[in-house]
Image (spheres, rainbow, N blue to C red):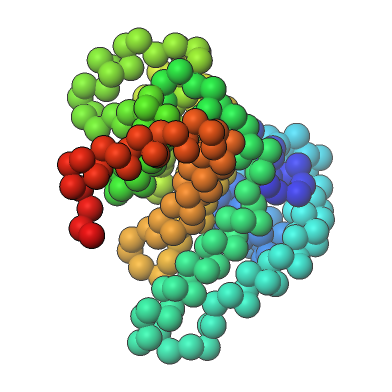
Length: 284
């Protein structure tokens, strides 16, 4: 999590932000090392809005003005400087871009470090608890995010036997018809975010179900809809998103759940091994 309330204010107020204010918030969050030293006019030019909009943004967040907002941004940056310097060293900026595998793996290393540094461990621990205690688990993951959702469904349903991934967008209402308060809905969403994911999470909240979102940014439209939020960096130097960090969070979630429920899981796996042997599932 961010170590200063300035970013928390942006996250908590995003639902009521105008499009211009969201642009400013996104820029400030994505450029935490450089943005705090920009004047209001320079920040406005970088974002593509008017200087007056930047000033109104500061008042919108309940600061006394832009200088007050800027001071809080600088204080937050100073507290994160050590980890930021470590992150910069994870990618060799002087390396040749022709060596794609080195470049992309380096980006993923940075994504993993960024994710680890900003991960809300309290939310993670509660996510493990909610997963174990849920009567039913529904996974919402569309387009490319479906790959991660399917992976999570495979392992959770193997050991818990109560997990379903909603694959058919048009039939989602039928799948969620009987959702209850003690069910858990896990939503995956990465830029560009699908409207259907947002709609399903809104419905889950209306039904009183617990919600966990795994997304790429604190300004993601999924964040206000999650009781719990796990943020994973996905940016690499390509038109695709990298799912190394989100998948690592999923790996951690499954591992934590199985360790907490190890007695039940061990018996389940022994039973499965007998079944797999009976059907000759694996190559010897």
